[in-house]
Amino acid sequence: MNAFQKLGLDDNLLQAIADLGFETPSEVQENSIPILLEQETDLVALAQTGTGKTAAFGFPMLQKINIDSRTTQGLILSPTRELCLQIANELKLYGKYYKGLNVTAIYGGASITEQAREVKRGAQIIVATPGRMKDMISRRLVDISKIEYAVLDEADEMLNMGFYDDITDILSHTPENKCTWLFSATMPKEVAVIAKKFMDNPIEITVGNKNESTSQVSHEYYLVNARDRYQALKRLADANPDIFSVIFCRTKRDTQKVAENLIEDGYSAGALHGDLSQNQRDLVMKSFRNQQIQMLVATDVAARGIDVDDITHVINYQLPDEPEVYTHRSGRTGRAGKTGISMVIVSKSELRKIKTIERVIKKEFVKKEIPDGMEICEVQLMSLANKIHNTEVNHEIDDYLSSINELFEDTSKDELIKKFFSVEFTRFYNYYQKAKNLNIEAQHSSEKDSSSSANSTRYFINVGKKDGFDWMKLKDFLKEVLELGRDDVFKVDVKDSFSFFNTESELTPKVLEFFTDFKHNGRFVNVEISEDKGRGTSRSKRRRGASSRRSGDSKPRGDRRSGNRSERRSESRSKRSGDSSNSNRKERRSNIEKKSTEASFSRPRRSRRK
Image (cartoon, rainbow, N blue to C red; front, side, top):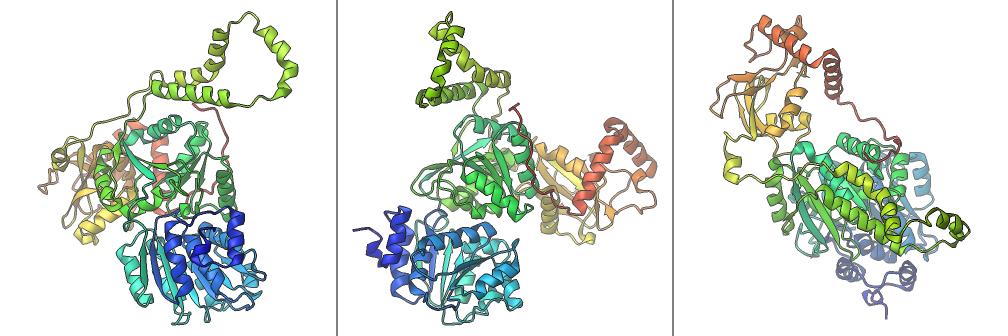
C-alpha cells in the first residue's frame, strides 16, 4: 500500500503522485494533510524550505474544491514571481487527472490582461504575488469574495518584504468563514501577529524546532580579510569541482558584480536579482535547473523561487542582516533527503553574527580553512582522473586510433599520463603556485570590544542632532549608503552638529572614498579619521572633502577648516589620485545619490579562468 494512501488522498491525486515518483510523504505532509482533509480549520505549519510544503497544502486544496464550479475557491499568496509560477506548475501536475481544473498564476512582469482572461475562464485556484493581486482586485478583474481556502506561503518572507498592508487589504476581500493555512520556515513575531489577526484558533504544526536548520545541512565558516572575499569564493569553488551552488549577496549591485567577475574568470555563473526582466530571470533559472550554470549568484528575494533538489552548496558571500534569513538560505541545499553544505565567508567584524545565527538555527558552525593552492591543484587533478576513469568509451574514436598511436609510439605509459594530465594541472598550478594564505586568526572578544583596537577605525562626520540624526538613524543611514551589515557600524556617538562612529579598519578605504564629494539633503557630508577614542573630542588625523569643490556653497556645520587649508588638501589629493580618478568618484557619487538601479543583466562573454 502506497504511504500516501494512508493520508486519505483520492485516486486522482494518488495516480498523479505515482507518475511523479513520490513514494513517502515528508514529515510536514504527513502531519498536515490528514488534518486539512478531515477538518475545516485554520492551520499554522512551520517547516524548513525544501520539505514539501507545496504538496502539504496543495493536495488537500485540490481534493476539497469543486472542480465543476468556475468560481474561485482557493487563493495562494507567495512572495515572488518565481515561487508563484513554481507553485502553480506543481499544482497543475498534482491535479492533472482532475478534468476541468484551472490553476492561474497572477504576478507582476507579465500581461495583466492575459492573466485576467485566464481568471475569467474559471480559475478554481489562483496563485498570486501580493502586489499584482492587489492591483487586480482594485481593477475588479478578480473576485475572491467566495473563496473557501486561503494559503499564505513563505509568510515570513512576505512580511520581510513589506507585504503586510497588501496581505491585509487582500484578505479584507475574502469571506470570514474561510480556512486560512499559513506555511512558514520561521516564526518571527510578525508572523505570529498575522496569525493572531487573521486566524481563529489555528492548529499549529512544527517540523523540527522553530527557526531550526534542517539536519541534512552542515554549516561551515571561513575567516578572511574583507578585501580577500572574492578570492576566497574562487578557491572554495575550485576546491569543489562538482559544485552546484547558490551564492548569496546582500544587494543587487553586489550580486551582478560577483556574477560578472566569476564569468570573466571563466566560471559557469549567472546572476538572479530584481533588476532583471521576467524573461531574463526565466532564462537564468532554466540554465541553472539544466545545470548549465554551476554557480548562481542571487539576492535573498530573487532566490525565493529556487526549488532545485540537487544543490550541493550554499555560499554566503555576505551574511544577511537578519539571522532568520540565513535559515532560508541554507534551506536551498539538503533538500529531498539529500545532504548539503552551507558555507559562510566572514571577516572579523562579522564573527559575532555567526554566534547569533547559531542560537537561531540551534546548530554549530565548524571553522574551516580556505584551501591553499597546492590543495586545490591536487583536488582538481584527482577530479579529472576520476572523470576520465568513469567515462564511457565513444567508439567513434576507433577510426583515429592508428594515427594517435603512431604519434605516441615512442611515449611510455607514464609519460603519456603525465602529458595528458599536465594540460589541466599546469593551468591551476601556474595560477596558484604563488598564491597567498587567505586565512586569518579570530580576535579575542576582549580585544574586539576595546575602542583602542588596532583593527577598528573611528571617524568624525559633520552631521548630528541638528540634522535630525540620533544614534540609530545615523547607523541606519551609514549602513544604507555604504551597503554594510547591521554590525559593521558600531560605537555611534551623536553630538549636536557632528558625530563619531567606528568600522573595522579593513573598511576604511571604502568609507573614505565614498564620502568624497558626497551630498546629503543638498550639502556636503565630510567623514574624517578621528583621534577620538570614544571621549567625544573632535581632533582628526586626516580630513576628507574640499572647500574648493564647493564654490558658492555655505560651509556645513562641524567643518571648522579655513578655505585655503581645505583647498591645499584638495589640490594635494587631486595630484595624488589624478583628475580621471576624481571624475570617476564624482560619477559614482552621483549615481548613488540618485539611487540609480543596476543595468539589466546581459549575457557576458566567457573567458579562460585567470
